[in-house]
Image (cartoon, rainbow, N blue to C red):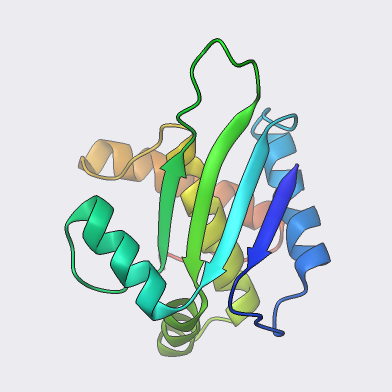
Length: 146
């Protein structure tokens, strides 16, 4: 289940369509019964989160926060994906992408982090990017890394 928190009341996102599309991604990744929170925020909030949790005092496009529920609580909660709409908008324009496609890419990227994927090591980055490209291709979204 996808839960959307639109804390900045951005109207340019079709939340129902976004949620349905992201749910299909969870289905494909075999975690369809899991709950995922996606929160849309402004630059101030994401910068504060980035500073607090990653010690980087700057705005970023997406942050992921895995669920930290004890194993005794049998809830399938992946965690939270926090997306800065302003940064995603700026990046989409700079990279010649549609906002919707780039937003979905960032949501998928953040979700993969919650599933244990990372891009610190080159070999891990290649695996993560290949999976992102594969998922996006099924949605008829071209390779964002080209």
